[in-house]
Image (cartoon, rainbow, N blue to C red; front, side, top):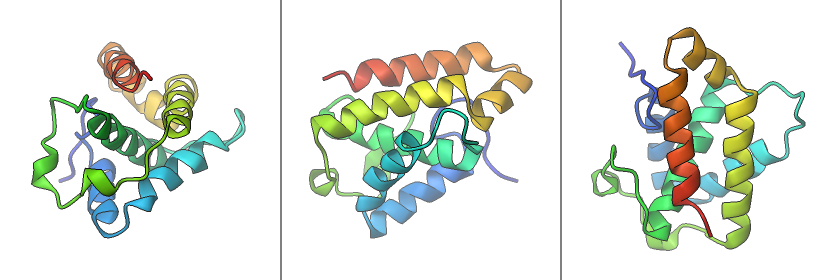
Amino acid sequence: MGAWGYKNFENDDALDFLYEVEENNKLAEEIIDKVSNLKSTDYLDSQTASQALAAIELFAAKKGTPSGDFGFSETKIKLETLPFSPVVLEKSKMVISRISSNSELRELMNEGGNEKEFTDVLNDLNKRIEI
């Protein structure tokens, strides 16, 4: 049985992505670039959206505003070596907006009755990556 919930680390896609980032920390920036380059009409599947939110959580943690629902000490990710810049944070804000407005993940949260909670999680993440 897989993990599934409205928080950014309550799904297998996000948790699996963290293990991939342990091996290659450039994946975090790459997933942000991938989603930020999508057209507004392009399909954004839930797996990619979950991975992007996990990456943004990594950038928030590096910035000093980590999520309260996951301890990064539980992974081998070295936040100090994570690529990071104001441009990444700006793209991350665009990605959050895209996921919030038009994504399969948003649809799943709406169908599951977690629309408000998911919106609150996204708003919190957006605040934590403010420049």
